[in-house]
Image 1 (cartoon, rainbow, N blue to C red):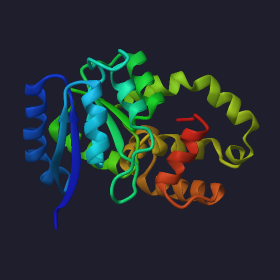
Image 2: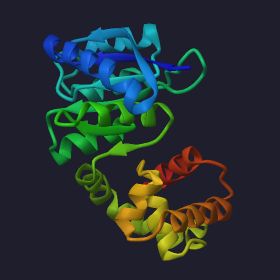
Image 3: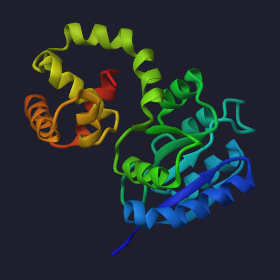
Image 4: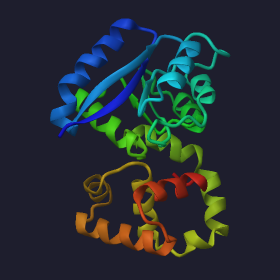
Length: 230
């Protein structure tokens, strides 16, 4: 049975919103096994906060540069929607979808609470997969954009690593795997990035979860984000 994912689209270009709806409708079932239900749209900050608050979708696809609010675009939307949950009690997730790939935009939106950031050059099938991953609590970035986030928190990560006894339990390789998993990489992607087998990745993830006394990738991501090491 095909799952339905409730979405709100936030972009100040109506034609782009129409294009995203059409592309997702075509790509989602084949690529990710789900069907989009567009429960709201918005073209500016104030409308976005109102629509998201009223509909409480699973995922909000959010453009970065929007009119209205305090002039901070997506950051204002995220601040206006803090703490919102779906009817099922899960957090409303935000995935930035923007033409901008500027480091300052990526970092600002992630600091404000978005679960991921992809550019508008993304293929429809990849966007469909990204929506589901964000809905499930994963963090989703392209490798280049993820690098901005790592660079931004690099100094903090070093400070935490020196004093964090839990982090000290992990080997150097386990830390590498942990950071990639927390950033939303799939096992195959981690294997490719680190030049190891998928089976080895699975072994490292199991060891990381055991050593940190965590039970899921979602908990691992929350643990890493809380220490600003992703």
